[in-house]
Length: 497
Image 1 (cartoon, rainbow, N blue to C red):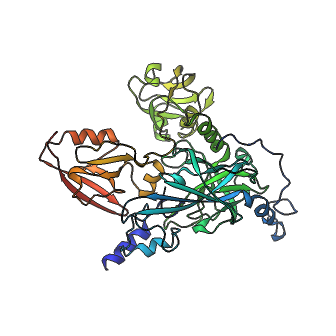
Image 2 (cartoon, one colour):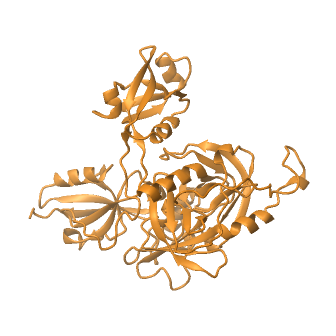
Image 3 (tube, one colour):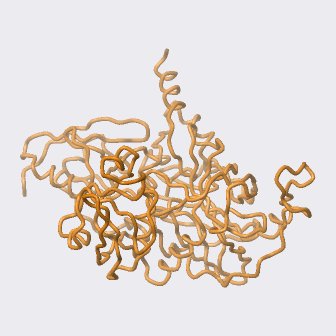
């Protein structure tokens, strides 16, 4: 088997979560407009009934006519340095460039060259004065955001008011008025089996509608602590990101965010962010410029039937405390490793993913009651909820902003969780600038450092700590990711100045 064939086979077999953005994975709501009265169903004249024949299948003609004008096309651009073409790091002479072209909406001929990466996503208008909801990963690190209306005649420069990578929600503002506004619905009423539709720009084809059913609700995904996703089988593809998921009444119930795929294209499993959650995030971004969440400082895990038996519980419920942060809110409240949290403020905890959402929704500084199982007995503890560390809500790195290079001459930046998932890494630091000792190395802006001297890094502070331990004149080996490729680069530590 040739190297190229072997590589193609490996890539095809890869099973990962792909975010639905275009040629770059670049980054963004405000108060929701007052909800309008429920509209009559536009899914056909007859109500949906189990086992009904073809005559009762929904007709989405009215839906696209009424809601299509409120859906926009979001085009982003970002300067990524020479040769970098996409978040996958495909170089123009890469033999697999054409393979990814089939799944990534590429810019028109002549665009996206010379170190500029372009991306395509979707969004929808929630306020007639130009407020637009989309995904954070659509506008992540974008230097420019262009919003094109569905009429194909008007486009505006968009300003990212804020973005929250933890929920993948972003708020964009354009200077316009009298715009069509999407009708907002209630995602809490959504049930599996209901008809839904998505409108967006898959592969750059604007105002495209696809339909299917809700497959599941409150779906928990790895590393997605704060979002109870709506799972559907609606066909969504790269470029659909940020577009609305609508019910049969034409009301927005979610924001299409990601798919589960072996190829990067649609395979029948799509996920949307519930609209209530998105609107709450957008309100905080508009009012405060950041999203505030509660925390209590514990690491938790699922209670399996075996663990429940070992701890003397009558069933597998609650969440097991794996560790307690020293001097954190839970530690001060008396919570211990091995405790099982059964309820939070009177609400029973059945699944492990429920507790982080409840805690995050609690205002920092308020007291919360924990019902805890310890040593075969139930007891109640009171914890003062702390504040979850905030993140930069707009551009993580502003072009031209002064940043100090480290000992090796590298300026490094954090990578949002959404982009880490695209790359298939737990953690890494993106190279923003290359100077000093690293200037003559193969490292270039856009590369991602995932390890130093065979030690995987989990934070920027940990990387700097390990680098500080290196003696001047000695080499350090950095494991660098560039798209699907990974290589070690040895750099000699310069003398301290």
